Length: 242
Image (cartoon, rainbow, N blue to C red; front, side, top):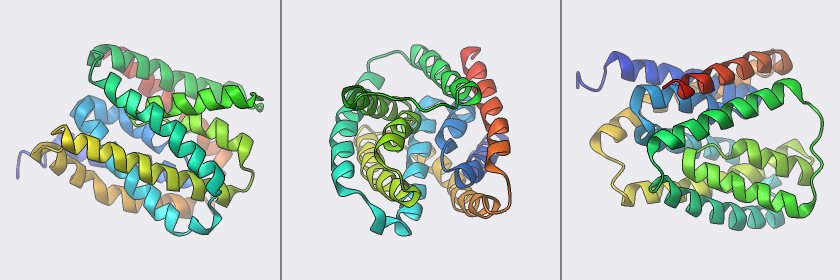
């Protein structure tokens, strides 16, 4: 028991709690913020197992209150395209050295943050390019459990109602995170250690999402996002130096 409740694991749990407060407040960025410190504290495999599990749990929570707003046509399309990318990403994750993957992920995190900090305009892509973006979203979900930023580009173009976006996305994430969880289980990644670490952070998911949802009603999300983006840049930079 003492080997589980170490300072590193407790810091990991705190990081998950904070990341999910931000997830509840902003509606995104939870996985992006959770992954870099999780990788530092737990390693890439354990971080992916834990963060994917948390993504499944948080998606189900949000889905329960938005399921009536699902756009089934877009949901089916996203499942197919994201699924192709996801399977490809899971395969590549087993073929590419972890060090190279971390550098790619670090550049990705920094790029997302800088784009959000300095470019607020709408990205007007053709339908063909949008399909490619969804495939890339699935790829990054399989590699790093972080396909959300790419997928947001697509849904912002195709879906306009906020609750419709949340319901449709959460439906898709439940299936994709569920598939990834099964793949991780079959690959033997749900070891006793990985499972115990995942359970340590699970209370922070419930508490963080609830607190973030409350804060969203009383805080300016726009001002808070500036802090989030700075944290993402620092997190990405820390991975480059790892």
